[in-house]
Amino acid sequence: MKSSVSHRWFVVGVFFFFMLLHQSDKLLIGSLTPNIMKTFGITMTQMGLASTGALIAGALLYPVWGYLYDRYGRARLLALASLIWGATTWLNGIAPTYRAFVATRASTGIDDSSYPGLYSLISDYFGPKVRGRVYGLLQLTMPLGFLCGMVLALALREVIGWRGVFYITGSLGVLLAIVIFLGVREPARGGSEPELAGLEQTGAYRFNWQIARALFSKRTLRLLFIQGFFGVFPWNVITYWFFTYLEKERGYTGAALFVTMTVAVLVLAAGYPVGGVLGDLLFKRTPRGRLIVATTGVITGALLLWLTLSVPAGNQGLFLALLAATALFIPFAAPNVISTIFDVTLPEVRSTAQAIQLFIESAGAALAPTIAGFIADRYSLHDAILWICVSTWILCASFFVLVVCYVPRDIATLRGQLQERAAYERKLLQTSQG
Image 1: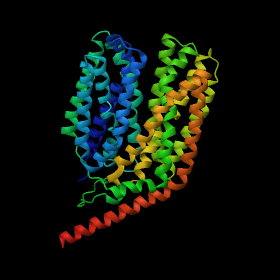
Image 2: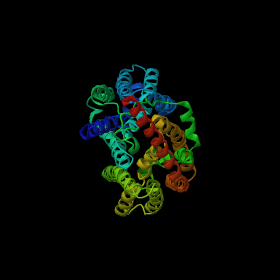
Image 3: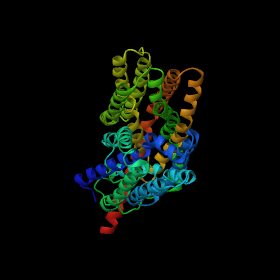
Image 4: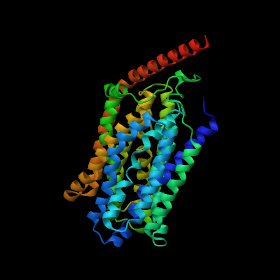
């Protein structure tokens, strides 16, 4: 049965708040770090170890979550993920010792790899021509979550303590688990595809190992998987080091630092839906449309970042203007990459396909801050940020250009498979009526 428009947007609203609050919960630990270190009397290395455990747990569980989502009901599993988020955050808040804190912090990574099912479920509510803008809207939550987490932590850490902040975010996770469990319906896999529109599917399409292995035979996916490893380098370098760069090498303090980062993050947030909308519009004209937008975004972002970092330290106005322009373009690829993965993948293995992508990305994410630190120690943070970001964006653009060559064929293959599936469903329906 086709879902009503109101329910589809209700689901988007629920998942928007799920991702916003979940990202806030993940990222606020940075602002709470001094308080946590004081509580346990630990070093920065020991504090870093606690965060590393969560990253490792999340990375290792991507394939597991991907399989489960494609094998079982996604809505119920997302409710479980939200419950795990709430419960593990509470456990992290009550940890009495440093060792307990490390163990419970690692457990918070269990739900961090739960997003593939969310995007897969949304793909069955919205057709290919509008998915980019919906994914772009949902991806607003990543930069906005960073801001919300920072504001929440700074406002409450001295009032209720870092444990109290965790109790609040953990409770929100439990509350959202109830909302998802009771309010989000499981759509038919592939139900939003044009070929299957209006059909009451009699076949139950679930995870299949043969279909999953065939993912690696698609050139589009192989290239996007490789691109993903390098594509996260700039994000993690900027996330870990840009604050320090502004303070240490450009002399930013107080209000100037806050205003610069706030403007950059807000413009960055706008770049996700803008990139998604542009990708959808161009996709209606050509199957290469999404990748053209993604390529344009990374090339323009690389050029603008080079110009931005070339601005003298004393010219804060020009630096802010160019930084904002850079921030607008660099998210263009994100919603279009996810949409392209689903444009060439059968509905029953979409969670698995995205989980593979994110697992590979997590490997790149782990390496990027260390490489940047190595370069910064020998040269400067300016050089580290510039060299890593520009070189990897150019490399990603090269992969996107190759994907542009292959994606029409892979999209046509998928559309053919769905047409065969639709013909089979109609035949079953005619047989049952006859």
